[in-house]
Image 1: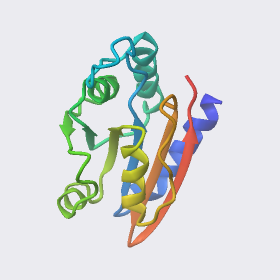
Image 2: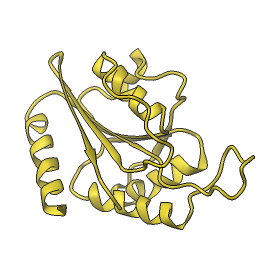
Image 3: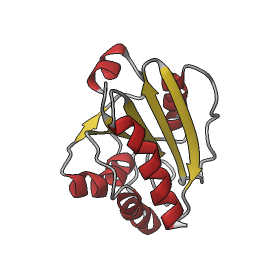
Image 4: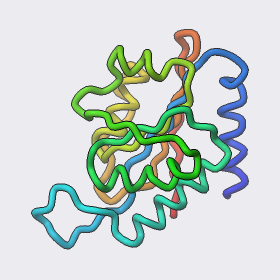
Length: 164
């Protein structure tokens, strides 16, 4: 399965590396601590830490130009292993403002990782695509990977499920 995922990523990136275009990888944060129900900003639990490390292995052969995360512990902790591996800093974004003109300009012709939440990752994907394709995901689903490519006004997208 890992070989299939790797091949998909190589094929996905090859055409866009040859010319101008942007590729976006969107994931939801890994599993969070659920012991304190009132805590709005929990850290990752042990399974989430493993998943964050797994994302860095999944993304091993992808050259990210930019990495974005919301300001929550769980999203930043999910992005950190990939950020450290790629030596690309994590930039914060406000999930209330998705795919703005400033974001489009900053990410033009770049390969970008965006870490969000069960509602914001699909919403962000939909903003990039320009159509309501992907619904919010279940609160226990931390495995979706949205890959969106934008080149010359043409947009392609796919959704992969990457189990831990």
